[in-house]
Amino acid sequence: MKALEWMGNSLRILDQTRLPVEINYQLATTYEDVAKAIETMAVRGAPAIGSAAAYGYALGALQYSGEFEGVHDHMEQVKNRLAETRPTAVNLFWALRRMEDRLREQHGETDLAKIRQALLDEAETIAEDDRRVNRLIGEHGNPIVSEEANILTHCNAGSLATVEYGTALGVIRAAHDTGKKVHVYADETRPFLQGARLTTLELMNDKIPVTLIADNMAGFLMQQGKIDLVIVGADRIAANGDTANKIGTYSLAVLAQAHGIPFYVAAPTSTIDLKVPSGQDIPIEERNPQEMREVFGVQVAPADVPVYNPAFDVTPSKLITGIITEKGIVSSPYSVNLLKMMVRS
Ligand code: MRU
Image 1 (tube, rainbow, N blue to C red):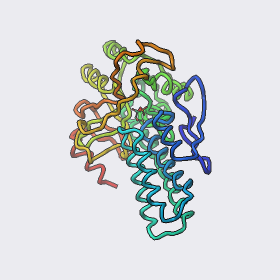
Image 2 (image 1 turned 45 degrees about the horizontal axis):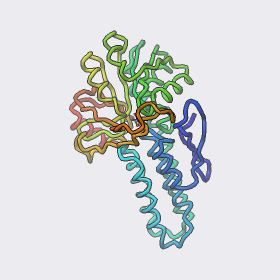
Image 3 (image 1 turned 180 degrees about the horizontal axis):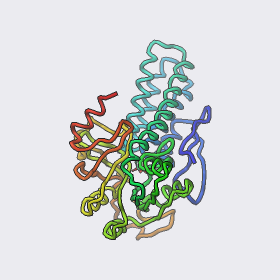
Image 4 (image 1 turned 180 degrees about the vertical axis):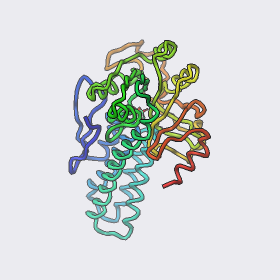
């Protein structure tokens, strides 16, 4: 199951809002289609959002039919529309910057077909890089997993959240593929249920043993000695290592520390935002209250109950044992080590 796939002149997006009950695909032919798919979370997960936005930008160029003089203004509109979809995952802005840089490199080029091709090539390269990077995250992370391990994960940081393979689930896949006996506890991840709906599905498809738990069960499992390791993904990592990830991640990190359990974040370097000094500066998305009042369209709370629905929280770096990237594992002191890693080619 692929989160997204380029079909030649459109982007095929697996609609993750209906999984695992329905397998529906959306065909995005305009940048507006892609923006809506990101907003509604048909496509979600930081690297997948970044890759989708890159294709959205390329679609923006493909659909342009005005005078050549207007193309740069049009592309600015395309970028702004895609950039306003979701605020937390920095991969979105990282990918759009790459696309803009590629457009800037076309300065002086007057053949629109060549500009379009260059942007499409860049979107393809971003997708290809993500495939490669996730495999490397798996390789680097594999040594932290013992021969037999019960691993807790939160949300979905798998192939559905990336172009392929996954980050946190990439590490788990690598461990499983090298013959380790891994068993995963998947948090259901209220309110969007990425753990219940997506992580379980992905792992079951790959025949990796998985058990679903409700979010509020993690502490009890740790107390019972049922968890050896926690691995989660990330949406934005600040320069000091503070990490924004799906709401509920912070609670897991506190619990892991209280029980002496290693807590790892797995993410590509495109998720690291050195411009943001600490977690306090990471914008946290708040989503529609209906996501809390309803589950799959079924009302579960009074229709008018006030709701607070932050989609992410921030785990302070002092609770993080290590950050697994495609360049290796970084640990404390993060302010020094993240910078060192980022300047290394
Ligand atoms: O709201 P979502 O589903 O986009 O949030 C996804 C997460 O929080 C993931 O853990 C994160 O993006 C990493 S995905 C490899």
